[in-house]
Amino acid sequence: MMKIAEIGRSPSKPFPPRPPSPFGLAIVVAFVLLTLQYASAQLQVDITLKRTLYIAYEPLIVNVSITNLSGTTLELADSGRIHWFGFQVETLDNRPIAPRPGRSADAPVTLEAGQRITRAINLTPLYPITEYGGYRIQASVYSSSLDRYFNSPPLNVEITEGRVVYEKTVGVPQIENKTASIRHIALLTHRLPNSSQLYIRIQEAKTGTVFCTHRLGRLVSSGVPDILLDSQNQPHILQNVAPRVFLYSVIGLNGEVLERKTYNQTLRHKPFLKLAPDGHVSVLGGEESQPEAIATEKTLPSLSDRPVPVPGSRTDSNPSDPRPKNLLSE
Image 1 (cartoon, rainbow, N blue to C red):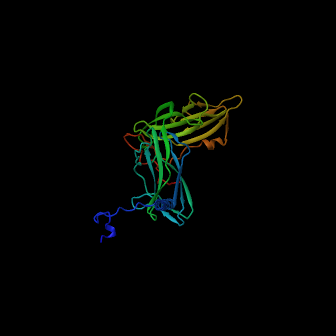
Image 2 (image 1 turned 60 degrees about the vertical axis):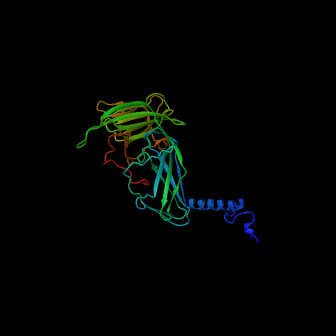
Image 3 (image 1 turned 60 degrees about the horizontal axis):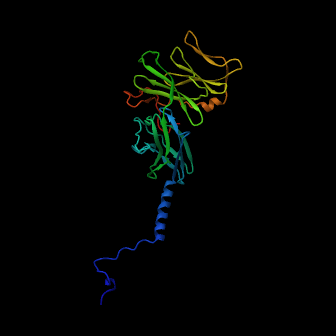
């Protein structure tokens, strides 16, 4: 008698496996998604930007937030050559951008359950994102205890260039035991969605090192703002930031912000810059004031930001220049 398994099929050809039922497949997919959601929810990483359009070499400040959702205390620390915090930067056509060399270790951070920390980080001295075009930025946090990376949603930014309205090449007054150098000073205007902005860029003429690209603030009047160089070749700028309101800035040749004041136009006098025979620059006319507008316009970084070399320049910044200690330095 023929066995039931042999009816209509050779014993050498087994029956094909039964396809999974839609109900069973749905359970598997739901389980995988739940597992991934649980894993990704242990650390939440978010990044924000004030805007998406920047000019080349301008400080690109990324606000990073890290929230501990694991339910337990987490110690975030470097592990061997693995930094516990970093960025992934690439062009919009998926070309990765490598960080600049010379980064030191990041200080460890202890996150209690439910705790959230926020840091503001300037990407410009850390990554060579100075070519014009679009970039994709993503923050990444590594937890050694959880043995995995946690990434933020990516954000896109665009790097462009402003319109040069003033430029001058000057020598740096030679100090004892210092090599003489030459600086190129440029004022640029750039149109943002809601306003026109004035920038100043100071660059080493020989090596191409950019010492600063500061956004000085709004510019409401057409034409070139008032600018004079003092006896030390330091630029003094007076710009019209609002009706009858003028902002006065003094910038050092190494990119440091030396002075910021606001002047109001009076009924009879409009403020203007005056160069004295001894090389001293002063503001004449108008009336000095201290409005809240200064705080909103003060977007200038501190000297902890190292100078940024132009691509293809012959040398990097001077080793004695101050550099950020790590990515998460406050």
